[in-house]
Amino acid sequence: MPRLMPDPGPRRVIAASNFVYTVGSGLYLTAGVLYFTEAVHLPAALVGLGLGIAGVVSLAVGIGVGHLADRYGARGVYAITLVVQALATAGFVLADSFWSFVLAVGTATGAKAAGLAARSPLIRHYGGNRPQEFRAHLRAVTNVGISLGALLAGWAVQVGTLPAYRLLVIGNAVAFAASAAILTHLPPVAPVPAVGGPRWIALRDRPYLLLTALDGIMAVQFKVLTVAIPLWLVTATTAPRWLISGTMLVNTLLVVAFQMRASRGIVSPAAGGAAYRRAGVAFLVSCSLISLSAGIPAWAAAALLTTAMVIHTIGELWHSAAGFEVSFALAPRHATGQYLGVFGLGAGLAEALGPALLISLCIGWGRPGWYVVGALFAVTGLATPLAVGWAQRRQQPLPKGSRPRAARKGAASGAVPGSATR
Image (cartoon, rainbow, N blue to C red):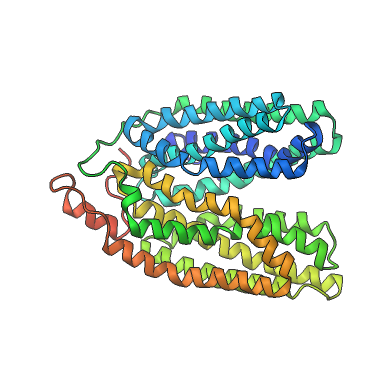
């Protein structure tokens, strides 16, 4: 962890805030659903429905809040989203019915999506010439924080009492509030002056919207680890059940160790498109290996699943690095929050629809379904470089005199105009 922390300064403040936040996220990701089913005694089906409603409602929040961060200053807007998320999470302890649960979890989920968009201008401002690499750095820190939170949540799950679950929820809310407090040590970022033209330019940028959709399809891969593999391992293979935790551990360690390294060679949108293509091939190979793990001895199934997870994680590293590159490099600096809010729609849709898709194909259909999912990833990876090329050719022009031509040219080549540390 000390090696992952940047040198003292604004980047360390952002990384420290992110680390504390993700410890809280790890608490919730591990035991949040169990809190509502075991402690609040809501039926699992209603919990799933409520989470789906919250996910859909949160989709559009990031765009609006990202625009506010662009216009009024990212630090303050981001801190407000963290405070709202802390209060909504604390409200979980008061949720005693389905609709109070939906209200609390919907507010928390919306604030989370808003925070991701509002944080983007901070990453771009303090990320130097390569904010994409700083974003990759934060992802490595995120995995450490989530892992620590998951370990702490294990205690509450093991105890299984109402006070233990409520302590977990309060710990989650405190982590979000502490993350906001740490941001007070970050120098404020002055809003970038708006330029002429439509206000919601990201929603008019068709190439960027296409990239958002393609990244959303590829983002379904994140649910392979948390949804499809656990269910497949239990229902279709003879592999030991402890391997579910083992695959999670392998994935986390590889991301922490190699996410920054995977991002270093992806320094232009074209390189990002090529990384999407490699990721699609890696996911096709991993899905094919997972499908072969059914109906074979336990040791062979375990070996295949572990190998598949390593290959899948390599694809995940390429996919994440590619997303960091194209989402920042193809977004105009004055609308970073708005553009990254739009880009987050793809991941939001994958979050909402991915589990049902994977369960239907991989678990319901079985082995052929894995091949279909793998082919979907591969085709998406092949299509993305074409979309990147279109986006580079059709980057939305700004009104004459609003920004130097050289700056626009630099953005198209992968440089981030005006993003050097000031």
